[in-house]
Amino acid sequence: MADDQERDLQRFLENVDEITNLIQEMNSDDPFIQQKAVLDTEKKLLLMEREQEEDGCRTTLNKTMISPPKAAENADEMSPDAFLASVEKDAKERAKRRRENRALADALKEKGNEAFVRGDYETAIFFYSEGLGKLKDMKVLYTNRAQAYIKLGDYQKALVDCDWALKCDEKCTKAYFHMGKAHLALKNYSKSKECYQKIGELNPKLKAQVKEHINQVTLQEKADLQEKEARKSLDSGKHTAMTTKNLLETLSKPGQTPLFYAGGIEILTEMMTDCTERTLFRTYGGFNIITDHEVIRRCLCLTGKDAVEEVLCVSILKLWQEVCVDNEENQRLLLTHPDIARLLPSFMTSRILVIQQQSLALLLQLTHTENGRNQVIKHLDMTGLCEALLSFLDFSDKKANTAMGLLTDLALEERFQAWFQANLPDVLPALTGALKREPKLTNPSALCQCIALMGNISADPTARRHMIAYEEFGNACLDLLVKCEEDMDLFREVTYTLLGLIINLCLEIPLISEMWAMKMSRKCLSLLNSQDGGILTRAAGVLSRTLSSSQTIVEEALTAGVVKKMIKFLKVGGQTASRYAIKTLAICTNSYHSAREEVIRLDKMMLELA
Image 1 (cartoon, helix red, strand yellow):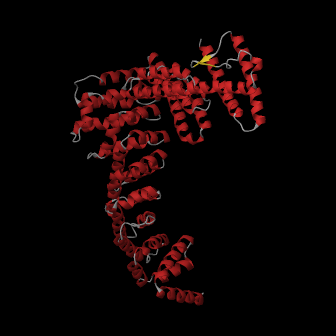
Image 2: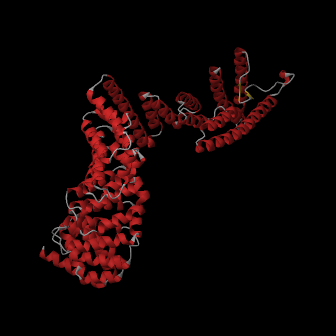
Image 3: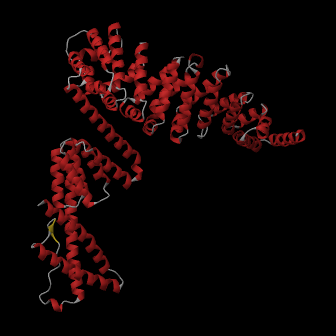
């Protein structure tokens, strides 16, 4: 029966396109095309009659007969025009019925979608099936029903529906997507990868998504192999495997003291020496035993921890580090646990130093790979995490560098960049706070990394507009520049990096305010006295963008001898410095005749000296 339905659908799909083309040709203004279409129609009808005789029945799809129109009683006397009119009338009637069925199928699809959104997948399947009863070649009904079957865990039926969708449209990427998902659930890993690879071939724009899904299949396949090996080890009675299982059972006991659980967790951590023990930890529910336990959970969530609670919390952080070593599935389970996703950023801002250190070490381990970084970005509270990482600027030791390096690595991921653009207004207060820190109390190298990250972000026009709109951010940049100038030897790199950020900010017009532009211009005029070529160039770059804000700023610059300094840039500076010098001179000479005269005089003087 299923084979007959499939053969009917295939024949129907082929005939619909062919008959539509014939009707269009019969309506052509070209007599030759009309005549040819009439002959082709006669041949088609004759062929269809023969097929029906061979089948022994008339093919029916969607209650629409695919058959020639009834002939007149005296067929020999029917004129070509009458025959053509009869064929056209039959086609129009069938087209009308198809439109009606399409409308009914669309309505049933919407009802199915509403049920799907509610989570009522059985009802959704009912409506999608009713819709297919009206229109059997509607691919979206097949793909939607496949998705509902997947939600119910009926993966074989989902695969069948995906096959039907592909019969309707061999380039249906949604069908390949659901098929890949169903094959993954059935542990048909190679077939799942093939489905996702096919999506990439059909739509190269989905390359990043395809790569992510294939990585998921690879990781799931690896996790499956790990679990098989772990079961073998346990079945063989291996001592460490049995000990891991017994320890987890002991830790699940209720009503013990926090110190009891801390001791058990420390012993369990020592057992996590290879992949087998780490895999057994997850297969026997280790993550849930730890995070769902009433006593342990209470100790983790307490803001002010006593000594015992502190020991328990640190032991858990160390355990998580060990169970996640070279084990992507454990990393995924850890990060997808809702409590852990919330707790990790809060641990990093704990007032207890050792908890801060261990949570940073855990996060550093999790972000060591591309997959780990994407898991962190996808599942953790990224606003809280950014704020937590920025708080490490208060440390003058290597922890500050580690935190800023971690944040920089995250910022290189496309997923992070997309998140940052969407959430920059929420993160700007924390970024502004980083700029407001007293540079003498921070790690200069870490502060440079932080400012460089902001500079990279500000290269995007949308992000730059958010930064300029947040007036406190621009003022913090100016204040930090003033503080750095007080000890240029110590903060030369910070000043250089900060000027790069400010150059980007000045690309946005209008600037924060005329007063801000004036103060920034004065500061950069002062920096033109620096002996550092990089700072000189970037200070000139800022000036070339702030001078035009007001005539007062130009006058002050002329008084400070900016023309002479820019002429010198033109003579001895590099390509970038020369570009800034030309722009600055253009602004000055455009407004003041005295500036033009000075340019000419200085130019002659330089030539004579040469």
